[in-house]
Image 1: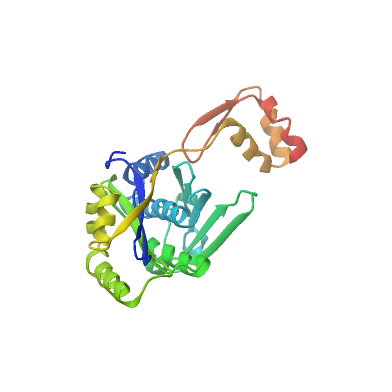
Image 2: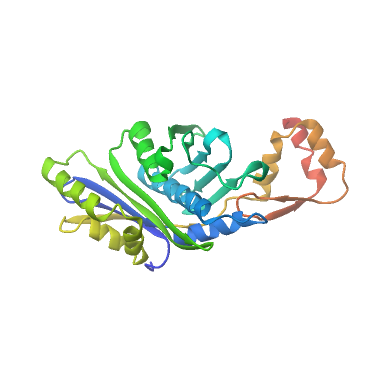
Length: 289
């Protein structure tokens, strides 16, 4: 795998003290943001917020449920606007920014909430909700892992956006394992505080690849790489799923769509793919609605 492509590396120290995941999401974030620009430009601050939500969602999936789909949803202060990251176990990731009523930016000020949801094989959904402290998606991810998953960790998601262009995106998590003792914990705490709280430093390492960041975080700590995972932009939409999404409409709304003789054109909000279908294709939805 090329170090310039988006992927994640997982490593565990030989003494069983720490588990580290580092991930590069630059290209994934670029494509995600491209699908959301449309007719309403996204300012650099909003782009960074959405990028961090996307990376944070992938990080939570890799930490807690790599074989499951995870959605990270940040609702702006006062419920105004939404940022969504959607990470699939295939490595496909997509995003959504909802800014109703001409809203320029989804505010992460006091009152903003982060909701993490993962879909179980049975179809059940496991979810947890935390506040977004100090407008920091990184802190929200750590708060979620601590309160909802009882995982003690240090996590960072970071992105650099300038003049609408994504220069870099990614992050890491250092998870404390049951075998950790006081001495290595003290070393790791000092190391993270001194060298890995600066987003620019983290992104510079990730530009060389996640393995570079893992090696720097675990400098002089013997470790083994346990997993790597490819990451990319991708949408799981299909004509069947788009049609299924219309089942939430009322019978009257479905009938109105069926009254036209022209083909229906329905766009996926995540990726912009346009699906054309005959109004007759909606007949089966009348029984469900």
